[in-house]
Length: 193
Image (tube, rainbow, N blue to C red):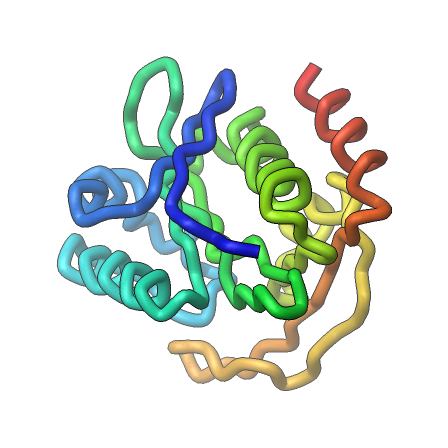
């Protein structure tokens, strides 16, 4: 399982390998405090967005992450960010996470298609056995969205992360495994149709 930068193209979004040229666009759409409500840290300025991108690129250099900018395909504007993370090539598993979208694109086809592109690449190109997803236990909207795409809830890591605010977060883990992928692919296709 060799995870390398690649552009993944759909009808409504394009996932581009994240780079420093995306910082200004990400800051333009990603400084809303509500976007960071359930994430253990927050990004409040273009300077902090630069740090966010530099950290993601450092994780990529170390082989544990592959970050993407989410771009609106018709318009070409950056609308969010996502990544493969916690990459474990020996065990043929990875996580899809650190996903956020500008609020005007939430609950639209953009996130569904981004997940379909990432999952298709993970299972059909990279040969993953398992793709993990996780979210804050309190983030009911995210939990429901993950279940809606067909992932299975595996359990809660209690007192898992101390957030920037000092709140101790419980984290819910989900997964999709290779034998479940055909049904999940069909489900996502139907959601997009």
